[in-house]
Length: 221
Image 1: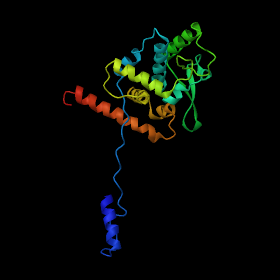
Image 2 (image 1 turned 180 degrees about the vertical axis):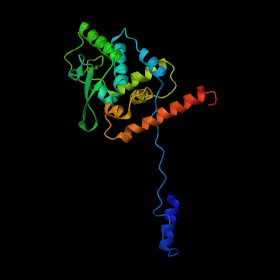
Image 3 (image 1 turned 45 degrees about the vertical axis):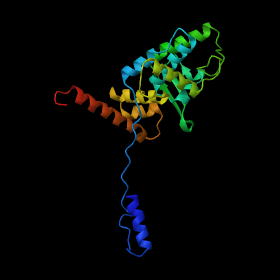
Image 4 (image 1 turned 60 degrees about the vertical axis):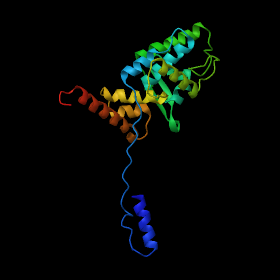
């Protein structure tokens, strides 16, 4: 299409033709790249991977549980402040893109492991004065890269061949919610998308899964 438009512009300059018949013809829309996701079983294996007998393992377990429970971005996860976690109500407050604030609830599993992590820090005197909730062994704020590296370790540990990133868990959060009946508008609010079209891409994943399930299990699939 681009070649034809350019060619006819050339023909006009050469006075071979008077009009570019392709000028107003729209380009075909590019198909959107679907975000990578992993199954609920794969998430379950990943969440069970950390060694909860160590500080690092327990911290990673709490982080993995929280990111999957809330769908927050990795930057929002590693910069989460202690005073932005309400353990009584089971919600976190995050500042997302464009300095937009949102309040996100989390479930019982995440609650359990956040409490375990807090108790471990308190009993081992691991700097509860730090503003950052998730800290490194040096009691400093954890970086995005450090969490990514930890995730890669667990990916190899469970034999997951797909390449995943912290964002994969955000995608899994959205996809699994939709697969289990959540409405698109609620998922949009939880993810912090300003435009519903940003969230609609996840419906393609859900439909893809339904199509695969139909082909696999239906007698005439």
